[in-house]
Image (cartoon, rainbow over all chains, first blue to last red; front, top):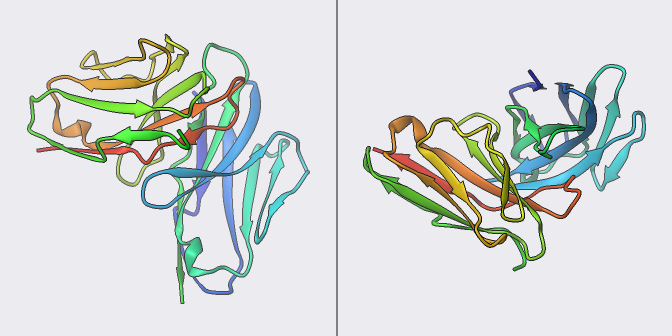
Length: 113
Length: 113
């Protein structure tokens, strides 16, 4: 059965700290891995990764995929209180009629002032 | 529209009552997904439409759950004879083909008393 596992489940840091969130996946015919940020209810897209070893960056956030280790990390540098959210990792495989994403449980990040 | 729109935002139902949740996807998005997110969990896939065709309904938890998208745009998720375990946030997402990146709505929070 396809699955995505995230760690840690929750994390509390202070403003200015750097955090690393982890995601591992087991997906048949892996195609892509996506990171979402969920504040309140609607997950918003952060990154999509398909190639191993290529870092994607957006401001203070960056992410990289390791296909050999079946994992990905999301880094946030110089954290701010506005980074407090649930960070969701999701993976997708090739084949079948569905382009569905398999989500992990998420990492709850709390950034304290 | 500018984003995925869902209504109602909140729904309180008595056990045994039928409910209908609406999703209005981004204009031109062929693919539409419904996900269920229980408290403290990641989104779980329910069903997938490509235009008006329901290509995958493998995630629907029971025959009390029914989804439709008759004209390939707006979709409705119907839950009959609601149970307490149906309490969750129901998220709708849409994407362009081939559908790598999903755009999510703000969800409907269903509470069954």
